[in-house]
Image 1 (cartoon, chains in turn red, purple):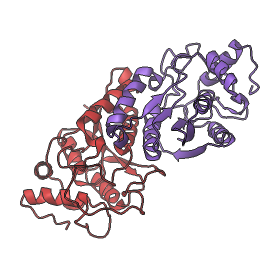
Image 2 (cartoon, helix red, strand yellow; image 1 turned 90 degrees about the vertical axis):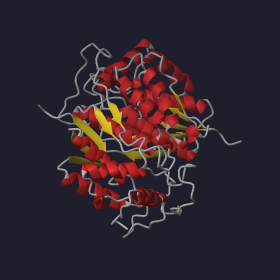
Image 3 (spheres, chains in turn blue, yellow; image 1 turned 180 degrees about the vertical axis):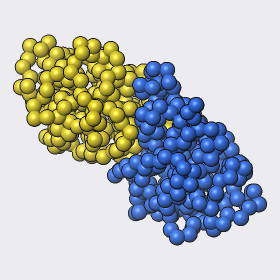
Image 4 (cartoon, rainbow over the protein chains, first blue to last red; image 1 turned 45 degrees about the vertical axis):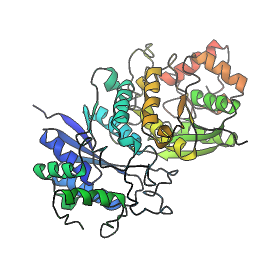
Length: 221
Length: 221
């Protein structure tokens, strides 16, 4: 019997890679979807390709332009801030307007086209940066909308958005990933996308926290 | 006082152009958003640009790739069907998976970035092709989701999706447009995008119906 198909939103970071391994472990035939949206950390994208290939998954990179984005992730004129000790308290300058909404919409289109009923995203609402588009109630509302607005949704083949990491801490994610055999050394988290992770951006800090709490050394740093 | 901003999803067709004129008449500062999504009727896009310029509106064309789309609008291997007399009864082969969902997500991102609280779309659920992403309940659900998933939504500056044509017949849309001064000769509806409108695709048929019911001659044909 053919395996059930799933679209995996794969950025090449710690969370989405763990999610890919989770979906694989659940027996899904994984179709990885990646975005080149002008992010300065292109290394993340190269990591995603490497990880998809390593897992013998089909993958597609969608190039999108967000000419209006003033996010620090896409606009080189906006500095990536160092940690202020307030992770998740306010919406940070690294927020890209409606980013997950855009990613989901392509994922829904892709899922519908290949007949996949699952979209997996590594969204996390615990050790996260406070992005509104990572919150469970947003994801639930989006899932509802997308099933009303797609052929698959109205013909009974509803798409479900799976968020296996939503309620886990970064440490718990890494713990799960290690059980699943995630090669974390291949993932990339740093927003700056330079030769080595900066260790000071929010993404680096959250990653480091997760490794420390597992008494592990992140050989990325 | 600065005028309120609105993002207008402008395809260059009859409905979206009427919507642009409607929003202008309501006093909005209109930012037109267009998509080059590989549609075979590129003439539509050129019409949109012409119409935005004519109205001195800012406009942005977003180029998106939907490599998986098997729609007759994007895949030259799929024929555009002649009318079967069942307009709106079934979802036709011109359906592009999650197209409006994708368009809305970019519109939300754009609206949020420029501080617009309105997105206008010429969706119509009466004389239409049965696309699920034109139905009011989908649009309401999407609006709800997007306000949960964006910074503007969670900080109280909610985005509203305006669908002034949703309950109008094609004839009523044209009637409204004529009052608003819409230059219909500049709009483009035909899915085939050849030199002249084919007169047989769904889009041509719906357009012709509207003109006939107004006892008007569409000088496009």
